[in-house]
Amino acid sequence: MPRYLPEVQHRPGADRRLELAARRARLMAAGRTLERLTTGPIAVPRAELEIDLDIENAEDDRVYLWGFLVTDTASGERYYRHFSAFTDLDDDAEIRLAVEAMAWLQGMAEGPRTVRVYHYSAYEVTRLARLAERSGDAVLARAREFAGDHFVDLFSTVREHWFGTHGLGLKVVAHEGPGFSWRDDDPGGLNSQAWFDEAVHADDEEEREASRSRVLEYNEDDVRATAALRDWLASA
Image (cartoon, rainbow, N blue to C red):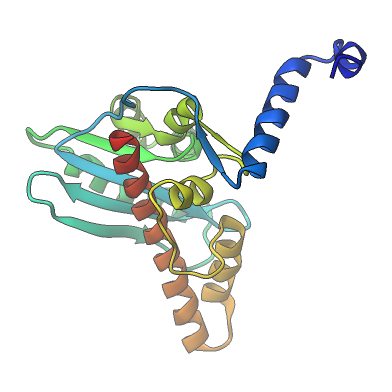
């Protein structure tokens, strides 16, 4: 280390990279994948109506699925709701689907109950902003404002409080933290793009239906994983 540092001191963040590498090596040697960086309770904004959000996009980068897990914290009721289009989308169709999903979401927020919408990373917010700017649609513009007041990025919370030897992706943290397991043996965003392609273009109808079900189950598990992670963080 004393000989290495002078050689890399000109590179920005050399000390930080060495620190992270040493921490990763120590945890891996101990057989651990997550380490808490802070102490004390972790602040996770809660609400009377809690909604977890995850979107899926095709290989052409169009969003074809908006998935939500709705939890009424007063009654304990919880259900999955999705807006999807298993077809090749053009600009107009992608925007129509987003408008339908966001109109529903804003309708859910009407009334006296407090509402929070949870997601993992800034991806959902970024895509919503891009669609709002591209379309000029009033529903999406309002949804963008709504996101600024009601959306909660759990990845930012995780990154502040935890270090992961294999990164801090949702699949890693939700499994290692609250112990969540996906139903699919090989869950992943890139895999879901292949499933979507099969759901749209496979020659056999049974194969198309099986792929549609696989995508929806995967998306539902993503939002259920986000909910499990939220509860785990709040209890840490």
